[in-house]
Length: 437
Image (spheres, rainbow, N blue to C red):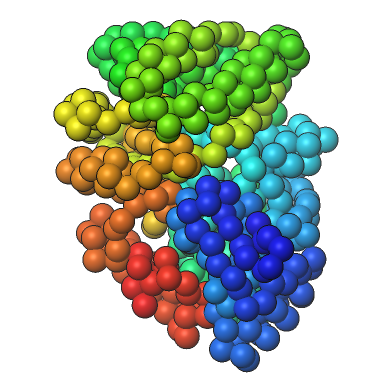
């Protein structure tokens, strides 16, 4: 968000910039006018959403377009279960917009503060071996190109561009509308419980394949995995939500309040991290409930952190996890934040981390007041050995030459960029690094 003094900072406080100009366009024509004006002044222009990317993907040194006012439902095709949303719509707003039509998003991640355009542009995903990331739900989009014109992309119009535009890193234009393929509203039966890490790892392929949505967290320096298994049920299924007091204790008091205190203590006194992690593994995540899908998928996160996440071929998750775990032991680090493991189906989005392969994800985190560099760079080396692809919105060190070898359609994406933005109106330092100038 933009602070007094005109400085924009992302949520994780990893990136900041003082734009030459900030605009808040409330309509699509206002976005067009802003792009035309920026081009006339030879100023790069970028749209920002909620600032939840850990990388500099949304950094706007020239003109920053804050799209919060470009929000809401544009249209609904009930027969085809498709909805069109304005690009600044936050994920947490979407369930209420879809509810009157009996629809829901097919899958979500565990944070819902992002804008829909930011979520798809960075490759945000949830978990589930039969479900793609959010960009895989996109069946259409409208963007403002460098000329200020509107370009509509769908299965009917310019379909050849959809695999690029649906996950475009903000490099192809300013998204103003996004059309999603939705599903009938559903509920989730959630089972969250601690299990032995060894047992979970031994059965990992079966656990992932046997559930609609499976993931686990591992607190370093423990032998416990905190598992989450969600089963999809019809919207008519009975709901048994968490009691308000119990939910507040689990999510607010323990999940955020006590975790904040634990992270702060660990940053000041690293030797206390292992016993704190062992305590956390005992008191977190032992519950069962059934509720609307969006209420189960997403949780509130108020503890600020930095994150790196790599996508791996699904069969490489176990050996990569074992190598990362051994690395932590060898280096003697004290890591207070849990490691997260999730899964996703293969998709056809050219720059998707799951392009062309069933994928597993390993995410590592550090409290925001701790320097993550040594930990992240060492873990990154492990992930690269196992054919990893970095999440575009999370911290990594790769540049275009290395990324080209990991994405079969990388040069096809660059050709689309050359066509839509030949003068690089939408460039910034991050895109220069990962795509080339």
